[in-house]
Length: 188
Image 1 (cartoon, rainbow, N blue to C red):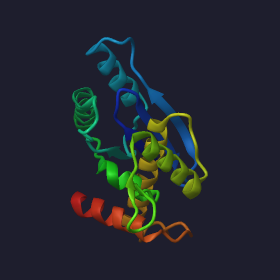
Image 2 (image 1 turned 135 degrees about the vertical axis):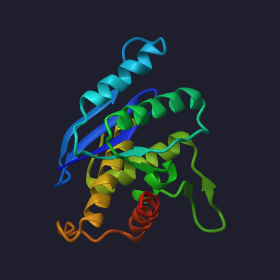
Image 3 (image 1 turned 60 degrees about the horizontal axis):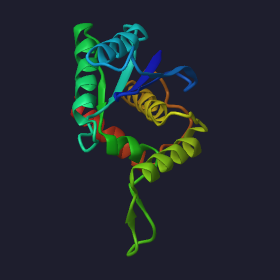
């Protein structure tokens, strides 16, 4: 079994793991050149060349608060249309659910004195959360997000198919169970 995480962005993160959580492929996909639509099209073609029938895929949902919302929306929809054309299903994961999966709330500080994490602070918190949960790191924030998505794909598949495959021996934190339950309710 292969489990894929896709973080659609101007630099799309892509990670493939096996049933044991071992990374088989990790890549930041940028496309050819800097002029759209060629760059976006070649990015999607590159991504789709790595995807196989039977892969279990989790893709990050749209985060339209970014300054590149139009480009990211185009890339995200392009990837979804390419998957649909090949009849490959995928799990949609909200950006905040991805962060929650590694224990990041978006806030720092004690009750009564909390501050919202900004973009770079949030990325750093996610990077630290991924390392503490999985021992994984990468120079690209997009690849790190894709790694979390691949883990979500794997854990969701195991949860759905628990009669066929025993869940790995780790006990999931409650926040991971909440994320999976929310995703699976939407997928059923």
